[in-house]
Length: 623
Ligand code: ADP
Ligand code: MG
Image 1 (tube, rainbow, N blue to C red):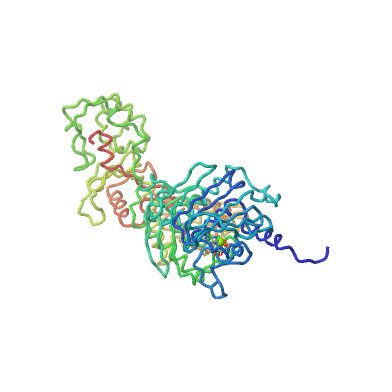
Image 2: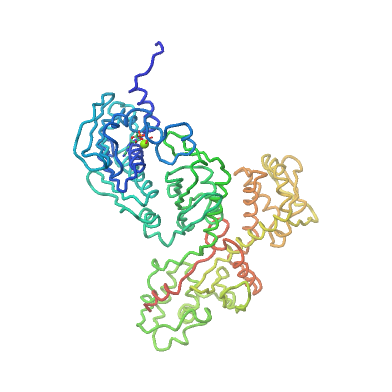
């Protein structure tokens, strides 16, 4: 075939391939046009997943009658006029491509009227046949109606998914656009049924809650910061509402939803240690920056941008999210709604229980509860049904009942089961902590201003160790202790090689090891800290090399060092079942107050749960 110029219809259809991938992309382009036209209401209606009909009405400034033919011409736009304009784009559109592209793959009509016009104008386009605009009646604003998407490009039509899937994508798209523009009212009608409705003039917070779900309100921390010329507002979810996919992480830049790896990385980094590595936080983040400091002209659908100063954006986002999390009390509230009511279980009357929370948690209330007749049998049943973690807080209360009714539940050695311990509340490290109780040698129970706090001793200690190690290693290599006799372990070839690669990192953590022959390594010196915590050098090295070979630990990255410190912390930490001495208990709780992120262990599991006084009051029927 000889070279020939393509027809303008074909050119536009090719361009449409980039911009108009599916019905949701049409919705995006048309709604963005309405936003650029300063509309305060945008109504979207679709039929058959958007394939049959997409109709978008706005009350924006409209298109002048004689500009209607131009609006659908390729590369025709009212938003930029010269090359310099590309350097600071403040509108969502600027390529002048969307309407032309949509027109080339559908049947399109535009009804529009400006404020100064008496009546509206209507233009209808099908393929490359666009008629002249003709007068019509209609309100100020623009209504764009698109029918039969991809009717003339069957190949594209085949790529469409089911109606439900395409409808879902449109609904997500409208929600994202609405999230970014809380000042604008939005509605979405799917096959004539109203499915979304957001009133105009909402605050960003109201709009975000309307979209994320009002029930999440308590789970979202408000973020509000200005740094390095970047304004940031958003709502960062508590670690507990992290999800398995990135879908609940939405980042907007100057009103545009973007996907940016470096920002995602900054967010992930800010949550590191608070959520498990395979999960993603729920977060919406709005960035506002000088348009001159970004290039939005790098992606056909403008879903990606280029920052003039990438690292400062990364730093600002990391700081803002981290700071928001740091300021918040991240301790999860105990979920009492799932436990049946204590009052029901007790089958007691309504007489109030003794004052709780004023004094010592471990004090048995039974003495003060004269006058009511608890049903110990029910109590014991209830106790048996409880999750082991829940046993902590009822323990003191039921101790008496259990002792009478089911002594086998109480461990034979009472001392081992519950160690009541007074801690001086004037101690600077512990705020409002008056007493600690160690339960089942695994959980620590104490109180703070809001209620009862139950701590997983292993998880907390692990976090404490991790933070200590991290702070310590910044000052230099960890102390090392020479072994009287080198410990040797068998390894495979990959592991032997890993030892060589990891040498610099091992030195940092106080370990000296080298291959002796192809299938063995010798450990000459071991980290003093691990030694003191009775960690077996052979076992530790074995696990470390396993990890290095399987997960490909990078020998020089900080992330890898953190992973190793994490592993050290886990191995060195006290385990569930370890009894703690008084000093250890006090030390542990002191550290809890001083370290960052004490609410979660380095893997992201919570270290503590709180049962609030108000929940207790509810459960005991005092309110
Ligand atoms: P772009 O948005 O990149 O300028 P489009 O093809 O989306 O290109 O739109 C072409 C032009 O049509 C716009 O520049 C604008 O002037 C006008 N236009 C499109 N939609 C609307 C609307 N809803 N209200 C007012 N003007 C519109
Ligand atoms: Mg546009």
